[in-house]
Length: 365
Ligand SMILES: [Zn+2]
Ligand SMILES: [Zn+2]
Image 1 (cartoon, helix red, strand yellow):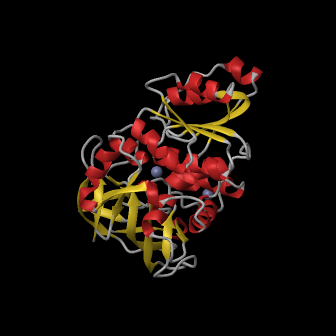
Image 2 (cartoon, protein in one colour):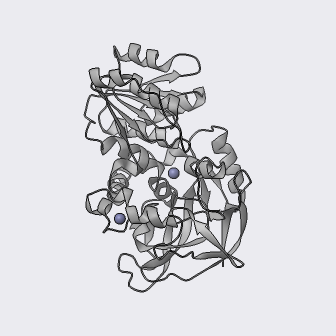
Image 3 (cartoon, rainbow, N blue to C red):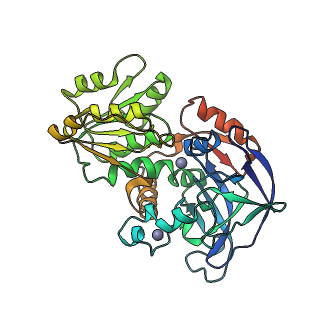
């Protein structure tokens, strides 16, 4: 048995309850969770703007300690402290083999079930799915061994949890993009968990100017801590005009860390000639954006998506753990709220209300 936060129906609160959990099968591990972040991608599923089979245990940003391993597990052993990857890449599909393990095809095909197509969690006779094969809002999880990336003892578990999604997604979108270069000017739309990490990614990449755009003054104020040099409240002024004015014509790179038609359009429109817009935030399913095609051609703009840091998440985890230990990135200040699993719905209310930084489920509470 394990205690987990279960979504039974969209637009209803998560129910924290005991579920039956199978032992790890071949190639799988049981991990005791230490910390899990409360992320907007979970909210999309809760609100029905992203679709997962139900009932499901959400949670895809977290860290835990390996407790038990199944047959044939060689990557990890009991006692290993790990960041959990929400893409347990298979290693042998076309995406994995062509250098895009973050886009693993087999992982996408099997979705919220394990690789053998079955579930490890059950509520009575009914199977319960695990978001991204992990479903980290549970005291223990059974998942593929390749979800685990071992970290040194000195990395706090809350920090490790955030590296599992928002830090890798945000910082990785900058440092793993070939258009990034020292001295560049950058605009970042959205100053939430991912946006703040795009900002600090731009800082460590040597950006000369980092313009944070949001609708909340308190979030913009908070963004200075991570490297924003200028802020624009897009409720008070047109962000594209403001960015053009601050940079004499537009930025080299713009990041949509929010994910919506308007922020994507603004990201492209805020670019200078030959600039690159990187779409990082996930828009609701089916959303489309209006882009001026002549502008793309004549001004030679690039629009590119970035998923899970644009590269191998595991490799990016290692880079970011090292950057954290050397004091180059600040993850501690991102964690502003801690909740026991029982109060997970309060954590989502705070995220939805636009509070600063990141809330985490702290399993020691
Ligand atoms: Zn996330
Ligand atoms: Zn694969």
